[in-house]
Image (cartoon, rainbow, N blue to C red):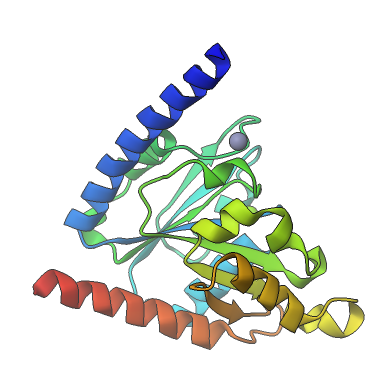
Length: 223
Ligand code: MG
Ligand code: ZN
């Protein structure tokens, strides 16, 4: 019973800091995306393709969450965008406090988008609000059709679903239609993208959506 109380307290404290993060981001008109997925679904590759495709059209910064190593942050840094690495040393999720600390290293006045790459894990990142505008859940086709049914919390909380590695479909016993149906049955309001970071398929549509979402935010702020 006391364990439950402690966990609730941790989450309450987290939500409070997340609210502060969200207020700061909103104040500066920065769209923050919390990218969540299993390890190896292609989060870092998607960020790389996004930066490549946007080619400076949006001012993007990246917070990289990893259990060990700064390998992903080094990949992102090649695109000459501000990147802050959080190494959790075994921790299986980012929390609002870690993100608040990382945000102090970024100049929010010079940003349109903050991409937060969470630790690869579909379980507890669902419980930790970071102050993001929305969660983007990424699933690769190699993970199978039933992933959304097995990890419903994450799919319920996400606003966007990116189905990655669609170029591998011919080699897999996975039906894209069923995978999508399973996700939409958990959360019918998901905006769904199909991408391949290898061939570049779907990246334009995803980036157009990002540009539109940022533009819409700017308009709302002006009203
Ligand atoms: Mg990564
Ligand atoms: Zn965790």
